Length: 324
Ligand code: ASP
Image (cartoon, rainbow, N blue to C red; front, side, top):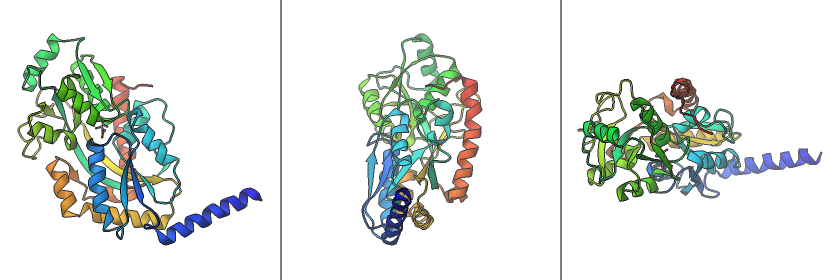
C-alpha cells in the first residue's frame, strides 16, 4: 500500500511537471565529456537554438565527463524522467556496447530517443613539432618511430578511441593511447607536444587546423570535405587505407519513462533548432552536417542507432579492439 502511494505521488508530481514544462526549472543537457571539446560545442550551440522553440526556457550544459562518455550517459539513465535532464551523446551510443565490455546502463532500454542532430567527420592530426606535414611523410615517421608513438583520446569507448583503434589496426602499428576526459584537454596536450597524434571531430579540430596549431593529415570520411579549412585534406582511403570510414553523429536522449507529451515538446523544439540558420551556420563552419532527414524522428533515430550497432559490432570485433 505504502509503495502504491509513493508510486502515485511520483506520477502526480510528473503530471504537475508536464503541466508547467518546460519552464519550471532549467533544462540541463548533460555532455559526457569536458567543456570546450567537440561534443560540448554541439551541445552549447544546440542549447542556444533550443531556447526559443522551448518558449524561452533556460537550457544549460552540464559536463559530466569521464570513462569515455559513460559517466554522463549513466547520470542521465538514472535521472528523474521529467524532461529537465537530457543527454547529448554521439556514436558511442552505438559503439560502446561492443567496444566496452561493462557499461552500467543499456543504450536501447534506459533512454527515450529524441532525435539525431548532426553528422560530423573526424580528422587525423599531429603535434606541431612532428616533422611530417602530409600523410605520406607521417607514414614514414610512424614506420621509423614504432613503439614510441602516443595517441590521445577521450577515454575507452569514446569516438577518438574508436577512430584511433581502427587507425592502428588499419596500419598494423600499436601506439600507446593516452586517455583524457574529453578531447579538449587532449588537444591542449597535443599542441603542447605531450602527445603525438589524435583522431578527433572537425567540431574541435577545424579552428586549430585553420590557425596552424596542429598538423592535419587526413579526414576519415570517404569523400573530401567542402569546409574551406579542410577541403585540401585527403581522405584516409585515398591515402591507402582501404575502406577506412568513420563519421560521428550526435543525438539527444531523455531518461526512460519521460512522459510522452514532454518528449513530443522536446522533439518539436529539436526540429525547430535544427532549422535555425544561426545553428546551421555555426555547425557547417565546423565541418558538421545538420540532420535534415527522418533521423530527427525519435523512432527513426532509434532505428538508425540499431543499424549503427549492427554495422560497428562486427568491425570492432574483427579488429579485436574492444576493452574492459
Ligand atoms: N571527441 C571526443 C570523443 O572522442 C569527445 C569530446 O571531448 O567531446 O568522443
